[in-house]
Length: 495
Image (cartoon, rainbow, N blue to C red; front, side, top):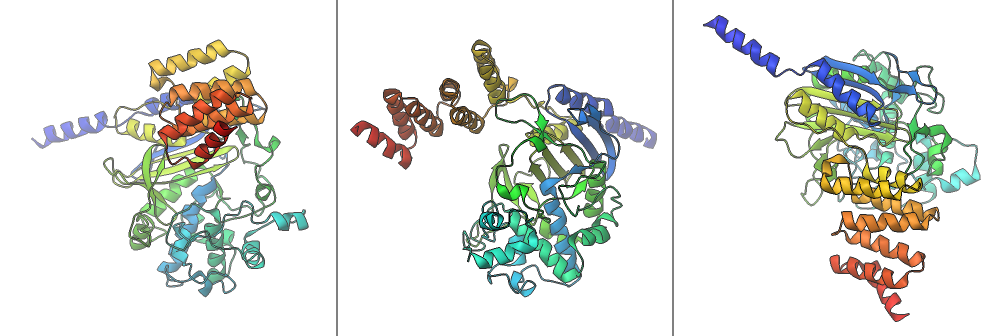
């Protein structure tokens, strides 16, 4: 009887175990569709079940990845910063609800706690334009974490909201948290991570660079699309950053770690088996944030309701298990580390291309691991459509739209991307393309007041007043609270 039981059990294990070949076929398909270029590691119960790379570390030179290819991991770094703070808490060096001022006396906001830094409810100003005056005064200066507090003080920068009353993703929070780590430990942030996380987790290919502009020999090149309608990647170094601060800064704590997918798997395993952080502290990090009014922080990522803990995101729907994660994105780089605590399985993706659909890929891979139905992520409809328009293939562009309308799974389409595409054409004075894009978007998203508003604005800029009035009327009809639309419409009807 026992023999029969074990044969059945073994058979079930075989049935429920996805093969490496199936996973490889999945990622090969993504690579062929130009949807994934990078490194992937998938693990179950702390053991790697699949690891591979696809595409090129340098697309222009067709240089392939190797086992030691290193990537910036961008905002996955925030989980490391939160872990470091919680390690200090575990050692009795701080309390998570302590005011930041207790450790950084010059910090000008007495009511912000360390916890509010880690859960993004501090209300601190964003850094995008914070240093514009400093950069103009000292164009050669590289802005670092040490410049944040003096700049807040100098310009008497106000909080954007009362601490704890709202949630807003903000890199500055984790830059300040990194300063606290340095103040309490007495060593640099980079040294702290090396001694307390990288070393214990045996992450031999991970480090925090002194200057993120200087690449390690094993670091991959980063690539991205130059615009919303291009199908060809360019080296990220050839593009101008959207904000001065991106070119003139060397922040850490919010991002910056250089690592590999295999090293991140070691980190995940060490963390979730409590080798580098205690169970109580880890549970605290993975608990959804509650605001001052008692409401849980929620927002939507890739169509799924999400909440935020301390440096970690989590899906609120736990029907497939409790899934925690953090993604990262910088120009030319997309990353994600997603861990299903209930099933003890992990998907790690590092792509040296921007706009990689890491959420859709990670979700599909998770379904594949569980031998459940999955959908291979599709190409972006707005990019395909825009590329065809730009190249004068209006007929083929319309055919792509017809194909999508007949089979919505043939492309990935959303209102935001079409809106962005239309405005990009408009900014470049490609007015016919802009008009065509918004006309198509109104067919794809007929209930979107925002699309009609954008279409109306574009028609107006193209001198088509009567048609613009119709679009604004439709927008206001769909959204009576569209005050800007009502204002423009009133002006147009009077003139």
